Image (tube, rainbow, N blue to C red; front, side, top):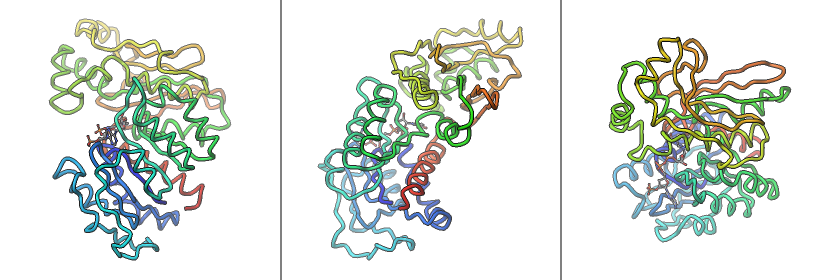
Length: 359
Ligand SMILES: NC(=O)c1ccc[n+]([C@@H]2O[C@H](COP(=O)([O-])OP(=O)(O)OC[C@H]3O[C@@H](n4cnc5c(N)ncnc54)[C@H](OP(=O)(O)O)[C@@H]3O)[C@@H](O)[C@H]2O)c1
């Protein structure tokens, strides 16, 4: 399978690393040859139709900050599983620094787009245009992006269906935690009535620290920024916007509720005080930022949860309880973010496409 990867930040780099680590095992287990033929960041694109060497691209990006001036002629993947790799330079394109994402997709031969650009909750771009372009060219798409899914879920799914291609987005909710494919594949006999969970690791970390140390929201937020757990501008996380995007994605994809980001009732955690946390503690409760998905409620906000309940997870973990008719409650816990953790979900989506379409 020839992969075009657009977005080479934490997640995109994790994808390259995961492919580098796992491609031989994937070939042995599934007979699937993964070949990254193009990679783009915001400044440049690099292409090698014989397959880029993942490690060289990663090292270059880490050393230089961007892919500008990366020389593909020195970079030919020696993947022994790659039958088409003749190690000649004749068809290898050099750095294509003047191409934007759409132009890149028009230029190269690929099977699946892996899209890991920033989540844009105002326009959904550039992810939306890249994804629709790939679909119209009959290419599969795997994404970790939340913005376009939260705004245009129905339009994107309809386009994928119309073009008979796959659209996979396991990584967009809960990072490594399997929450989207799992119900479809392993709970198909049951009706999923609701999902209630903790879908944002940054806020969970902040609330956990406020609880264990009695510190103020402002102090813990500063500490979280220093540790790289919170972004410099943490608005998306602390105001519940990130969790609301995930709520909408779950509503549409798992519960079949046609909804968009503006349908979610959202409250963040910035007004939670150490006093309210202490009061809750005395009564045997914790305060958590809880996302609720059901046909009657799409909501993100602080809620009291019992100390010994499945919701009492600490640190940056995510969790979700699926309420079903036949199997009762099923709870999943996992790493909601992280470079390689999120890449693991993307790689699983890639493998599932590869298995289905026999690449
Ligand atoms: N980080 C996580 O743990 C995690 C977990 C789950 C989901 N996600 C989602 O996954 C996506 C990627 O996250 P991330 O943490 O990797 O973000 P990031 O570190 O900010 O990386 C974003 C990447 O996209 C590139 N980019 C920006 N605009 C572009 C454009 N117009 N064309 C091509 N490339 C462009 C950036 O280029 P430059 O390198 O040149 O700036 C960068 O390489 C986001 O949508 C995020 O919400 C992240």
